[in-house]
Image (cartoon, rainbow, N blue to C red):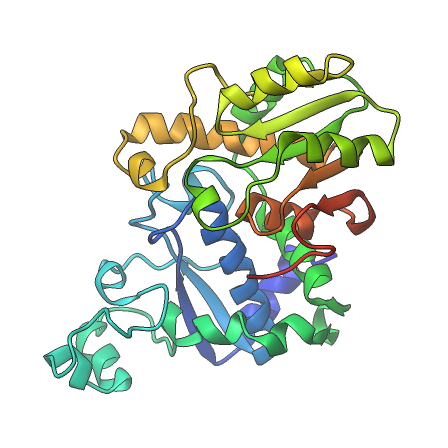
Length: 318
């Protein structure tokens, strides 16, 4: 377990600093999962971790603190919206342009004269905190009295950062109560929408077959972005009882389409997603795909022995 006061003390003691730009271009859990990986890399490499979320694609008014408690320094310089890219810059700046010719140290001094000193943009470390070395490394952080593999340490950092503010906690608790869940249930995540363009979609029956091989429980909460899946499950598996927060008007998630919606719409959907994720976290068994970002997240947060991926035998970073 990582105690926040001890994390703060250690993080603030490092001389080099990363400003991590969260909420740039991807869905929430893609952004969050990579933030956690970056935090661990920084702890291991003795780099102070700071956040920039003023322009986050999940922002309502402030960014990160619209939903969560602060856990580190957060900078507000708007220049990070322009220059602090998510991934390495290849293809993002024209070869030979003024910006491409400026060494990074000069670029920082020129554009960030009024900001706290820092050493790394997000893109500077992107390939490092997602590297094969990180995936295989066993971490030891004596000053936090923690050690373990990547999955274990990321789980501790989720416990540190996944702390709702008071308003979000109330909204999430209310939604969870509205689901009228049984005491014991299976958790299932079936992603449709634009995700099926990236990875194989599994037949709905495969989730149920795996669940039936694990337990006698025949009640399941299903996180999905397409209500037709709920109808199919209820028709095909009538001995099961299915619960969901998905509504009949939901026909599959498209990140591009979602990005065009109003702030109020995105806020409502995001709180519902948080609620569903918390429900899945408390299930007796979770069955999903580690290639999806909610599945990757739950693979870090939940016990390994009760968290099953249909696509890979164990948790993985892709």
